Amino acid sequence: MSDIQTVTAVAKYIRMSPHKVRRVLNQIRGRSYQEALMILEFLPYDAGGPVWQVVHSVAANAKNNYGLDKKKLIIEEVFANEGPKLKRIRPRAQGRAYRILKPTCHITIVVKGVS
Image (cartoon, rainbow, N blue to C red; front, side, top):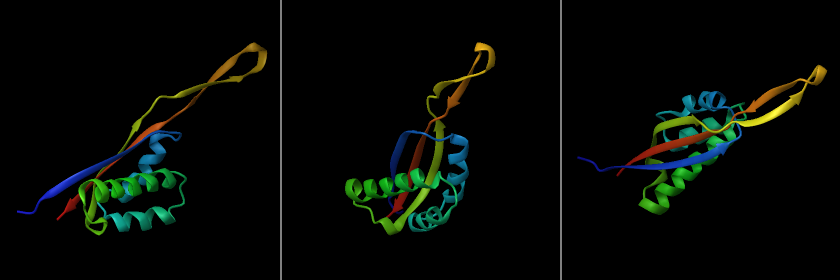
């Protein structure tokens, strides 16, 4: 039986809605490391940038900490959890104020390397 190793990378407090990030994460779930990078490079969404960084980071973790080959990595798990919301105030007519919630998220990527 082959030895399977999992490696994780997390980007915290990314200033983007988790809903928008999940749209990108769904594109790369279950794909190989190299395939994921190619997809992320050409996606038209802003969320592609932070996700691309985390994919790079998890591959670097796998190589440096576990000695795994980047070409043999497969993305096993990806998810974006909700982070704290930044609360801002927008002045409105007649002395009122509306709240503006600026969402953040934590992006987690788990890869497995089959050696």
